[in-house]
Structures are given as structure tokens and as C-alpha cells.
Length: 604
Image (tube, rainbow, N blue to C red; front, side, top):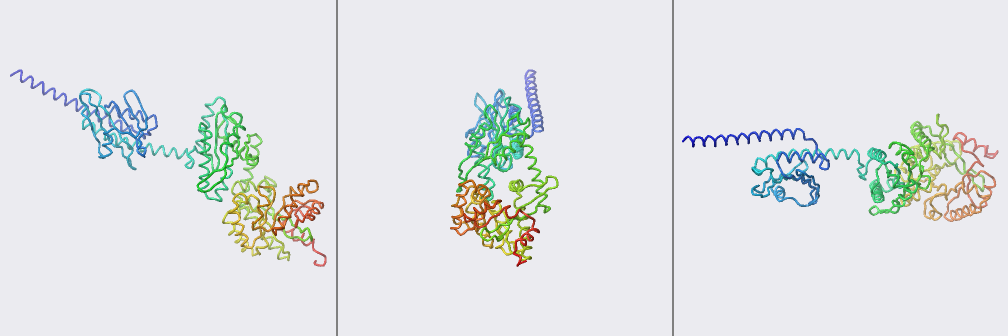
């Protein structure tokens, strides 16, 4: 009896001890879970920190292997598998059977008995605010005492819920970081991230770095004429071509239609040759949906450390060289110290121009046009004039291209147009009915609001439309010929006259004149200068006159400074001349006095 009682006591003690161990284990597990959740921050699956987190989960579950399968869409899963001695990342469509059961039932699942070498798995779904994130599967409990039970499954479910929240926060944080460093259109690094990556490349490349700033020259024209959606497609196409051309290069979009390309000097070689090769691989025709266009680049280069030791300076200097390349056939142009001074001057001019336009400081001078047959004044051309207190006299050849590049051409043209028509109205009051011609850029003509603006100014000044001639550069004819004709017809419908300025210096030919709604052609000064010595210049002028007259157009020659030039132009049939031979540009108040001086004594 004593023995039986002793056995019963021993059995009771054993049961109490096992119960105590289970209770201690549960308490320890609870403490470990609490510590895990407390220390759990945002988790990004691609971050090295994720493997450490999953290692903790594996230890909490006492699992031999842990598989985090993240939903990639289209039936694909990205697996992060952690064991006691390895980490594996794979992409495969397969999931363990127990994980498939979880997806089907929507509830955690436990499969296998975990005894006699039989494999055992348990799984739970990870669900975020936007739906399924993935499935977490634990395989084989460590130790030989027992397998996974329902307590372990509940623990897995709890951990899975916390891990889903951490992954969602990690994904949100990654999206925010990506938005702060990535251009959303091209998916390339933005300016700040490009500068950061360039700094790293410079610091880690002993042989130096070549950086190219690349401008898509046709971007603005495509945007203005075909719309921003097509312009965006053009940039995406250029980004793709850059990736294909230089898959190992640092690529970034640094603003508007501008990109940066950086490679070690050892791979690039001479910057100019590198730039030429880049243009050869990227330029060419492009089909954007149903629209065909052409990719043309301007490219400026710098070399580190020769042209600068920090990334921001190199990017700025590469862009400065790039802007110079636009006037050098696209380049490539290698940066020189002189460009720094030129760049500072351009910036100062643009800043001062904004203030001048806002304050009405841009003036207008007028140069008369004279008929070659009669000597009568047929009109005047309005020429912008600007004198700045600090910069001095700034010539149109300098500030007009900068106004075009900086988006100030619209307000500049509007100011010149109003001043010119107001002056013309004043001459009318003095009985001088002379018209005025105003130069208009391609981007201004193609702007659909310009026609309305011209009509509004004509009405507010109260002047006949036939006294206004708009001189269009040849560029408007090649930027978008079809749209140009539409806008020109709309302007003609107002009663305004149209002229093609600087004819023969751009891309166009005489064939462009056929069918264009214009009234006159202006021959560029470059052909007038060589009339006395260059037979080719005479031939060009004669051809222009013959075809223009056949089409019913007047021909005006500008830049006439010598009587011999005027005599030759008269012989060739040119209708009107303009230049210093008859008068230099003058303020509006002097025009009436000049006109009066040319009157006959009887009329005076």
C-alpha cells in the first residue's frame, strides 16, 4: 500500500512538473512574443533586415524552416525562406499544399502529425488593408517531444497579423522613399537622387567619371503642338533608349526634357566620342502611338575630377555645356571655364527680363520699309529694345532666345504688340497711315490663345487689322507645318497680314511658299551683304523674287546699307527694302518727324 501510494504521489508530482513546465513555456513564449511585437518596425521584403525578423519568427515558432511567400500578382509568388543556417530568395508559382488550403478556406491551417519522421506544416494568410499580402508557412517543429499543435497555430496567426502590418508599413515607407527619389514618369532617379548616386560613383571610381547632360530638343515642340501626353511618351521612349544603349550607366532625369548619363572614364573614353556614340544610339525616328516624330539631342559633357569634384557642380556644368550644344548642332560640347561666366550672364539676363516685363521696361524702336520703285514708305518694323541699369544695353540677339528658352516669349510678344499698335494709332492721328510689322516666334504662333490675344489688342487699341503684319520665322513651318497653316489661316481671318521672316536661313525651301497663307517674304541680310561680290547670292535673291511674284507675294530685303545694294535689288525685282541706308531704328515719337521730313514741300 505504501508502494502504491508512493507511485501515485510520484505520478502527481510528474504531472504537476509537466504542467509547471508548460505554464513556464507559455509565459516565456508570451514574453518573447511581446518583445518581438514591441521591437517590430516597418519591414521591407527586399531589405536585409527582413531576414533577421523572419529568423526571430522562426525561433518563436521553434520551426525548422519558415517560408514567407509574397503575392506578386499573375499567379507568381516571391519566396523568402529562412532555415537555421541559410536564407534563400526565389520567385516561383508554387505554394505548399497547406498554404493553398489557407487561400481556399481563408483560415490558418495545420497539416501533418509531426511524428515518426512525418513532415508537418502550418500556414496563415497575411492580409493588409488592400487585400492579400502573402502566406507565412512554418515547417517541422524543432525537438522530439512534440509537433505543432493548435497553440502553435494560434501563435502563428498572431505573428502573421503583426508581420502583415509591418510589411504594409514597410511597403508604404518604400513607396514614399521611391516617390522622393524617383521620377514617376520614366522611373529613373530624379535630380536629387541622381546627384546622390553621382557622388557615390565619383567617390568609388579611382579613374574618374564622365557625365553627359542630355536634352531632348523636340520635347517642347511636341508638348506644345501634340499635347503633354505625347510629350510624356517621347520622354519614356528616350529613357528606354538610354537604358538599352548604356545598361550599366548611372541614368537620371534631371528636369523637363533633360537627362543625366554617367559612366567611369575607363568605359567612356574621350567625352566627345562618348557623346557622339550616345547620340548615334538614341537619336532617330520614333513612333509614339499613331504619331511619328524624331528624337534629336543636344549633349554637354564634363569629366570628374577635372571639371569639378562634387556632383552638384558637375551636373550644373554639364547642363551649361548642353545649352551651348544647342547652338553647335547638338554637340557634344565639353565644358570650359568660359561657359561659367556665360551661364551667369544668361541667368542674370533672364532674371532681369522677368522684372523688366513685369515693369514694362522693354521698349520698341521702329525701322521703316521703303518701296524700291517709288521711294514711298510702306510701313515700319517693330524691334524690341532694352537697356538695364546694371546690365546696360541688352541686344535682342541675346535676350530673345533666352525669353524663348525660359517661357517668357508670350509676355514679351504681347508687350511689343500693344506698344506697336498704340504707336501706329498715334501716327494715324497725324495722318500717316503706315502699317507696323511685329516679329512672332514659332511657339507663340502655335499657341491657340495667340489669335484671341491679337484680336483683343486690335479691338482695344482701335486700329484696322490690315495695318498689322506678323513676321513669322521659318521655324514655325517645320515645327508643325499642318498646325502652323491652321493658326495662320485664323490670323488671316482677322484681316492681319503675314510675312515669312529671314527666308533662306532656316530649314525651309521655296516649295514651302506654295499654299501658305502669307503676303510677303523677307530676304535675310546675309544674302544682301554679298550681292556685289557673290553671284550665288544674286541667284538666290532672283529665285526668291521670281517664285514669290508668281505666287502673288511681295518681297522685302532687310539689312540694306549701300545704294549699290538697293540698285541691284531694284534690278532683281525686290519690292521693298529696309536698312540703315534709309533709316536706323528710332523711337515712336521720332517716326512722325521722319515721315514728315520725306514729304514734298507742297504737302507740308
